[in-house]
Image (tube, rainbow, N blue to C red; front, side, top):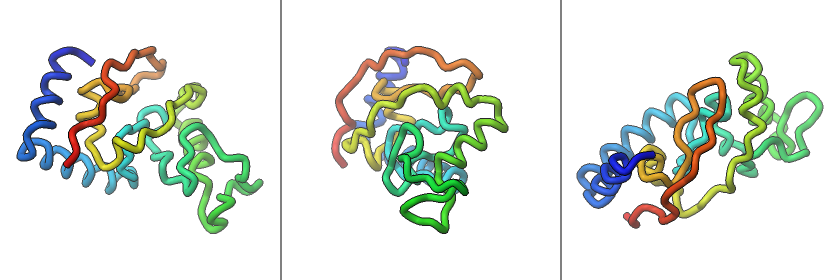
Length: 147
């Protein structure tokens, strides 16, 4: 992101009265719409707007290898494999090529933090809404202050 977005994120993260409403609004909307798991490093825009952290093994880069032939999860056979759902939706949206991009492993220090603020601060990749994924360099490695 830019220096301006990093400054805005820094201001919001240092002030609880600004950060909490942003976090509640983001979390509420994403949980309702996408069944978000609050990882703090959202990759919805790269996974056909399906939260990959819904996988019981929390695998961020494709199915685990235990997916059954009928597309069911190996851990919970009554559920569809989340990566089967992601691939099916990506096909419908015409963005299967985005699934080839490797996601960095989940940073557990960011769990239950605002992915929006983490994106503005340069800790996670920005939204990828276009058809072609862009190459981006992350600027900030430190997690937000503890709450």
